[in-house]
Image (cartoon, rainbow, N blue to C red):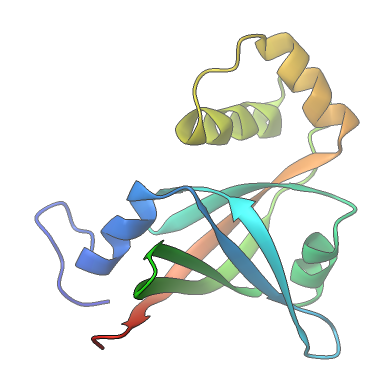
Length: 145
């Protein structure tokens, strides 16, 4: 990544910190792409997402950790962050480390949850885990590139 700002992030990378919705691309075992609309929190070249254990994207990432996150701040311009996925274990006890990280993701995207105990129990019941996409390449596309 080039063009670092004073904070150490790239100009392109700043867009990922400003937006919280995008499309996650993973690969099926046969090589076909799989796309999912997602919400994410981004900081320090890591996109963090809440996933469930039973989803196709989770299975795909366990098979092949390569992934890309696509965002489109306006029609004529888009950004893609490519990297390697790190999947945590599922949250198994309300308020465990994974549950607290999931709550931090939720709060970065939305706001503090009004009932943290309820949230932590839901994360266990849903078999939620954290995807940390470690970004190693970002590029921009659109009409003027």
